[in-house]
Image (cartoon, rainbow, N blue to C red; front, side, top):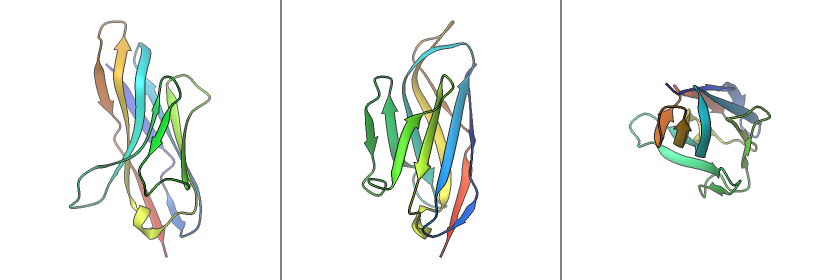
Length: 121
């Protein structure tokens, strides 16, 4: 069974920076893509950033120029560096791993439990 665990969510003032981390575990052989989403109450989950196994990155318009997604130092980890944070970035941030190949399964998709980011003005 694949598990994703996020960390790094805290409260910060507008203009500040945060780094979120996500670690995937569970006999994983490869992951096609890892993504960060965010969600606020009453709204749909929004895709923030993607990094593929080949290293290609994509960002939501709201994240371009301020957020950077990258692979962590450990295998099957991903970070999201968030700079110049705005109050509208306040949300629960979720890590997602897609196209997971494990020793038993292919094509799995997994979500983390979410981490709260609060940006105060």
